[in-house]
Image (tube, helix red, strand yellow):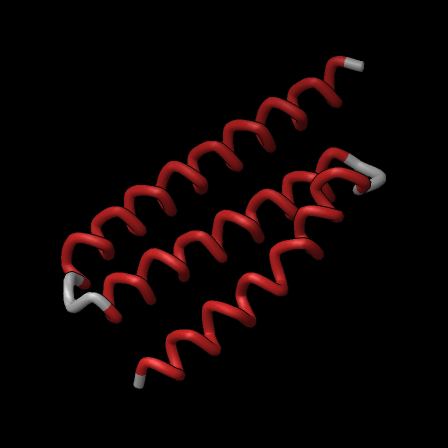
Length: 89
């Protein structure tokens, strides 16, 4: 089972540079927001997998849920701000 966790963490680590590229080079602000959300979702998966591996899933799941909620609220706030800014222009 340890090899499964290790392989999954490696695959997730290999995906992060693609999202980082999208977050830094993305032609629009929404592309950058999508890149940051992708990185945040991979961080949530990291937390859950590490918690499952260490047999402390309850603690790491609470952290992952909190981080996910912060990510959701932040994304909604930025989207709403950009939508409102676009209406005034």
